[in-house]
Length: 418
Image (tube, rainbow, N blue to C red; front, side, top):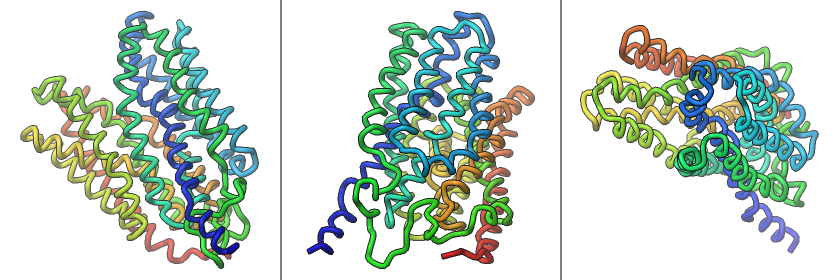
């Protein structure tokens, strides 16, 4: 009888609330604060009289502040009650965005950027995969895919809502209204549902079976490479560079509309291109299912091949169909940040110091990816078209593929401790 009870707990529904909850938290924070930030640039700059580049610099302040905070994330996540840590950081992020509704000078946005970067380090990107890995002994790839899928749906919904609020209530009030929506979406999950590990709810991870070794991140009995040794290995260096280089693709997202115009298409077609990219997120659970079966590295090779095909198609841009397919294939890069990086790290270094190693990898993501948009914009400003940018994107993807292949072979020499 006790064995049956444990089996129910290990296969129950509660673990699935963790990826769902984190999806809501990410929609309320990174998807609203960062992804939708560009919608505020035109009205803010028209009102206050400074340039878009000056205002957009707050995102660079955010990137560097987050990168500087990352070394502390892996250490503090297991130590501080998630209800306190996540809720506090969500409040700082959202209130820093709300404060933008009262700002009159660019330095104030920069200050908010720093606050969002420091607090967002404990909310964006890293915690979701860490918590999911703790809650899932099996099907963790699918669980992360589910989180990414819901984030994509939420982002698609919040985008027109943001535009409507700015148009209807002015940008200052829109900041405050979005903050209210964000708190309603996130706080119920951080306060009442999300926990760092299933033991806090008297449960075992999903798929747990008798005889399994501990899987919780930072657990001394979990298998893996000790963090100090891991940071000195070739696979860590290769993943640090490869994952950081993957964040450079973010620069293309903000340029699709302008690329459409430069090719002679309408602004509406540019919007269709952005939608085509968003639709790929619907495949996140499928990508997670594939990763569970063939491994993170082989799945990453597929993603690199898709991106390279997308860059080739965008370079050719012979007709609308080719462009839409190319943008859709390129959008596979979105699985890198939300799914493949954590899975690659776990597959390479194990679960023992997963949170710490993952947070160190994110330093590279923040630093290397900071100039992503200016780099793509540079090609257009210099040459009057995006052809050079697409060649650059192809080279980046080919380089990532090479780094991952070498890392896959080099990781075989790592010695895990049990």
